[in-house]
Image 1 (cartoon, helix red, strand yellow):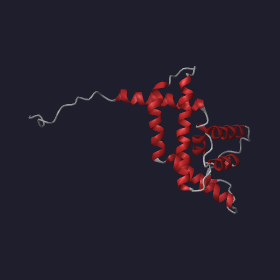
Image 2 (cartoon, one colour):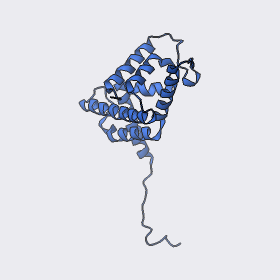
Image 3 (cartoon, rainbow, N blue to C red):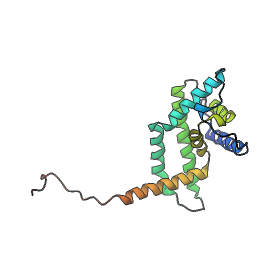
Image 4 (cartoon, rainbow, N blue to C red):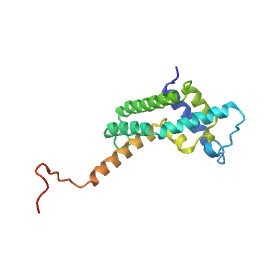
Amino acid sequence: SSQCSFQTFQHYFKQINLSMSNSNDDLGFEGIGNCHTHKSNANDAEFDTLIGHLQDVVIEDGFQDLQDKFLNEHCDEFEDEEENKLIYTDIYNQYISTLEGYIANRMMELCPNFKMSALLELIQSRPEEVDLDLFETLTSLADFSMFKETMINYKSQRDCQFDNFPSLLVTSLAGGLPKH
């Protein structure tokens, strides 16, 4: 199968987070464009290609629209409270499954021999060479507390936008514009 379970996806990124937090402070992220890659071997070219495609996938409108739609549909379930409701886990699992499916499908379109497990292993082996924004996006998918915070923030921003719109008076123009 070209996909791996999202539990595996979560496992990889939790492991990467742990290894990065335990590493030297001077390791730092430099991003693909400025990293210390060795262009002399096929693994580097594969890494650069896959990471480039992955970056493109997570910033494309389709991914953003899917994420926004999901957040909008489910954010009303979330409350800014310490205690978590059981439904949060179901929504979280659906969220990561949905986004992983989108990423895997798009990556298979871009790279016909794509295997999610191979990509995750590449990222795990070279996390310092992954663009920081991409890395944070991917690791946030493996973190329930970040997901819950995202849901609450999305709900707050959405509700705030609606509160800031003035009431609109809608009148029919069927009879034409009012005469002065």
